[in-house]
Length: 496
Ligand SMILES: Cc1cc2nc3c(=O)[nH]c(=O)nc-3n(C[C@H](O)[C@H](O)[C@H](O)COP(=O)(O)OP(=O)(O)OC[C@H]3O[C@@H](n4cnc5c(N)ncnc54)[C@H](O)[C@@H]3O)c2cc1C
Image (tube, rainbow, N blue to C red):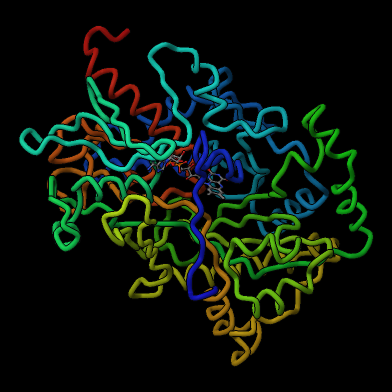
């Protein structure tokens, strides 16, 4: 990576990241939520949260484990409206190794399945389209786009949150709250706003002259999923037709008119949730996700710029793939042991905070070893007869930084993991939920910030465990469950 830095982009838009994300719908594993509840957080175990997943879904994907899903909720779930022969061929390869085809949001959680997406009839369906569009005429809802909250107002005497200060078209405004303030600016920006408002570690705030309202470990416990993106394959010539077709004008018309064709997908063809030998317990709990995606890493320099890969690595590894038809097996680390942090540079709310995810920094190198085991699982897939029928060639280009190692031996892969892993942009845990006896906890089980009244956080920051998969579904859950908690608090017995 350039400067040893990678990008963690966030969607600064209505609907947040769901306006720009890859739209994969993954609930996570039941055990994730049971571990969440085991931290003392009653109400967040799988049996408690599953009804919320069902309630929010309008599930139309094929091959669903029907008993586990529901029609009629606001979040439309379907398969991407376009896939190629690749998915079927790789499913057969997985089958040869004894893996089943599964609905990874259903009962069986280890195996391979076709991606489920939060698209609706082939088009993106963001959180804003799902929740704000139908409600924007409500008299009790004010939406002010292009506004930037700079501080939460908290009374120094009562420690009560009573509004926010925000910047809009160059002017500062105050929005007062009559009941409470609910912060949902995402794992990076919610942490930044809490810190700017005096909620955070005393030792970090005092040097910046920010008066401490509540001395909590805000910004600590930053977790993110990373993926190794160095397993690239080139398909033989006859497949290029399919690739070129995607660029035709017809495809645009097809997409706009009927929500069909290659423009309806991000290129994700297949997802596998697998368990490596690194996990010693006997449960069906995955520690690696294999995400097979077509043509994302061979579409030119500009496309890769946002990943911050060095010119040298790009030219050596990806440039030779430009214009070729192919696919990548991304190896995703589901349960990182490494933890990072978000801190303030200074007290200016318009300066981005310091984000240090500390990837692959755990003492015993378990993260590195798990990714290595994941690479071995992916390579096993390529050794099957069904995979060989694809005629796909493993991209032979070597990562320049790893020339000193013998190619494809473990030392090479470990070096490659360190140089060619990217963030999947799933930051979480920076305002972690936990009991008051846990000195790292920032919010309680009802999303209330410790030491401050009338302030809750409801976004990825509060997730105290690693989720086995991407995060949107878990964040929708926090929204749905959080809404019920708040309604119960304010309405009590009056709730229907
Ligand atoms: C490129 C990318 C691809 C991804 N792919 C997937 C995927 O395929 N599947 C999946 O499940 N997840 C995916 N994710 C992750 C997922 O989208 C996020 O984890 C999730 O949307 C985060 O939700 P959130 O509510 O915590 O925060 P966000 O979605 O980040 O929402 C925060 C909102 O707060 C606003 N905001 C921030 N600061 C301020 C401020 N100071 N004042 C006013 N407003 C502010 C932002 O503009 C934004 O609208 C992806 C993320 C990215 C970036």
